[in-house]
Length: 320
Length: 257
Image 1 (cartoon, one colour):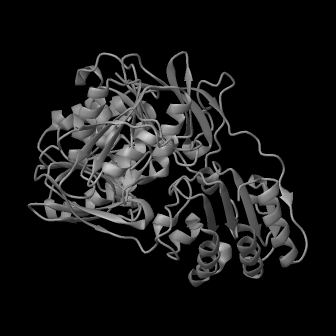
Image 2: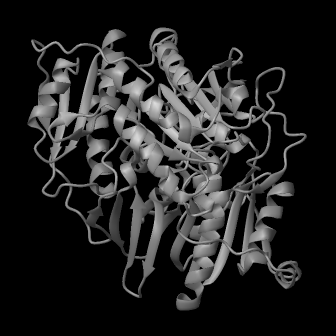
Image 3: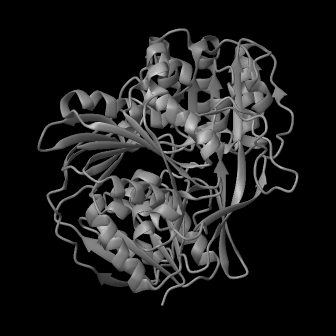
C-alpha cells in the first residue's frame, strides 16, 4: 500500500520535469510512493522513476501514441485503486487537467488544479492554490473520505539528484479498449519548439508598446538566445498580432517562471493576475508611470528596441 | 434535441480582490458580477450550431439564485431559448456544481451537446465540464478552440502545450469545454434584451435534483493576498549599462540565471 501516487508523463523516453519535482518532493518527505505512466515505450521512463524514489511504477502501454481521455481515465482509476494511495499528485499539464477532474468525479473525490504549494500537516496533504488567477491564494482542504488530488504547477519544487541504485517494481496494466465515441485523429504541432508558457523557466512578454506585430521578432530573437518562451498581453492578442496561446493573464495562461520580463506592457490587473506567480519580474517600459513597475523587482524606463541588442549580448555572456 | 450550456457567474476581470479580515473568503461587496468569459464562447458556439441543429439552447447555472439569474438573462439576450437556475450557496465546489448541473441536464433529457467554459476565472478549477461528462457517462473534450459539426460526428481541436492542437472526433452526446479562439461571442442586442425578459427561466433546488447536502469535496480556507513585493529597483544608465546591470542583478542578487 502506497501513501502517495504520482502521475508521470514522459517524452522521448524521459520523464518530464513537472513529474520529477513531485517524485523528489514525495521522496524528501519520506513517503511511500508509487507512480503511473501511460503511453508507448515506457520502460526507460519507468526505470528513471525508480531512480527518483518511486517504489512501484504502474505502466499502461497503449497501442497508439497520444492522449485519449477515455483510456487514460480508466488506466488511472486502476492504478490509483491498486496503489491504495489517498494522496494523488500530478503536474498540472494539459493532459492531467483534462483527465483528473473526470477521475475525481468517478472516485467521488475532489481535485485542486494549478496548485503552487504542498505540505503535509497532521498526516494530511495541504495544498496552496491561487484563486482569481493569482489575485489571492487559499489553502485547499479535502473532505474526509475524498482522495486528495492535487495538480501542481511546474517550477514550484526542487528536483533531487537521481539515485541509480534504486529500482522500482514495475506493474503493468492493460489498456482499456477505446470506444468509437472519442478518437484522437492527429496532433497538429505548434510552430514553436520552445517550452510552453506554463512550463517555461524564463518568459519574455510583449504588449502594446511593441508597436506592431512584426516587432515581436525582436522578442523571439532575444528569447532564443536565452532559452526563453515568448508571451503577450491581452491587448496584442485581441489586436491579432499573436495567437491566443501566447496570452498571459486571467483570460490566458497563468504562468510561474523563475524570470518574467515584461516589455511594453502597462500592467493591467488581468495581466498581472496571470504572471504574479513569477519569482522575479523585470519591467521594461518607456512610460515610467506604468503600473507594471509596481509589480516588478527590477525596472528599466527605456525602449525595448534599444535594449534588446545589449540584453542579448549580456545574457549570452552570462549564460555561457 | 437540446444543447445545454453551463454558465458560471464570476467577478469581472477588473475586480480588485479584497480578503475578509478572518481570511474565510473574499469581500463581495464591491464585486461586479459577470458571466465567466470562457462561458461566453460556449454560449456563442451553441447559438452558432443552432443554425444546423435547430436545437433548443438551454443555459443553466448553479449558484446563489438572486445574482446568478443576471448572467442567465445575458445568455438569453444573446439568443439562448431557455434558462435553468439551480439555487446553491457560493461555497459549492466543482464537484457539487457538476453534480447539480448533470442532474438538471439529465432531467431535461434529449441531450445532443453540453457546452461549458474551459475554466472559471474565479476558482480556476478547469473541472466542471469533465465532471459533468462523467456524471452523464458521455465523452468530453476540454480546452476546445475549433469545432466542426456534422450529423454523425463532431471534430474538435483541443489546445495543448507549445501551441499544438489535438484533433479529436467525438460522437454526440458529449461535453465540450470552450477556449478563447473558438469564436467571437456576439453582444446582446437591445431587441434581444427585450425578448429575453419573456423567455422561460426555470428555478430548481438541490432537493429537486436529489442532492441532500452541500458538503463540498474541496474547501478553500485561509485566503491571503499575495505577499507585498519589495519596492522595484530602477536601473539607470545607457541601454548598454542598463543591460549589464540587469543581468548582473539577475545572476548575483536574484539568482535566477
